Image 1 (tube, helix red, strand yellow):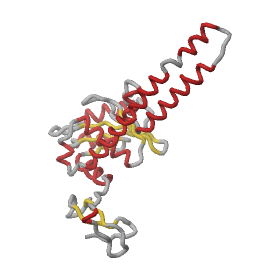
Image 2 (spheres, rainbow, N blue to C red):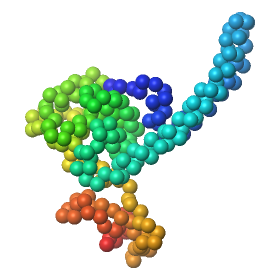
Image 3 (spheres, rainbow, N blue to C red):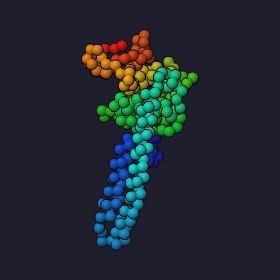
Image 4 (tube, one colour):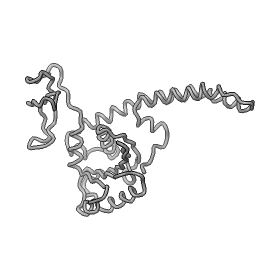
Length: 252
């Protein structure tokens, strides 16, 4: 299973900013109000319960201060994904940013994502949850070396020892034919660099046109927004498309 964050602060920094706010409120209510209100026949225990309220404001403030940091961390990951232009830009990322990129892509696909391991190699990097299913993700940002069958076998063993339904092995390069042969017929999905690049393009936010250059669809009157072609001879090139797509399919 994925390695969990080593502290609650690391967890809160990875979570949405409002989780820190809720945590701060809960800590203050529980430590500052509920626990001190408990009365017992033991005088020493009453002193201890009342003492719990003393650090409650401090802990609440600490958790509250994590909220803006979590917000900035979330924005950084959003921008990280939207700034990718092609497979080459993905390959230039640091291994940690590569994992964050994959995590953000799956979030946009509707998965609940837990970021796990923090090492450049080995172990499971992400845990995905959606519709009651659990998927494990291993990221391999190998620029030159192909991901071989030994890695796939190792990850299959990790999957067998977990309660997950499948495992996705994602790389910025390619897999060997032996790796594909071993994965065939198993709940193992190998996602190479080209497939990853296509996934990133699919989930990237449309680029808004500046107001002074804004154009409108001549068919329905909606705004035209800049999009990136995902397939065909113009794959990777930008074009103007109607914001009402797929209801309106006008392009320029």
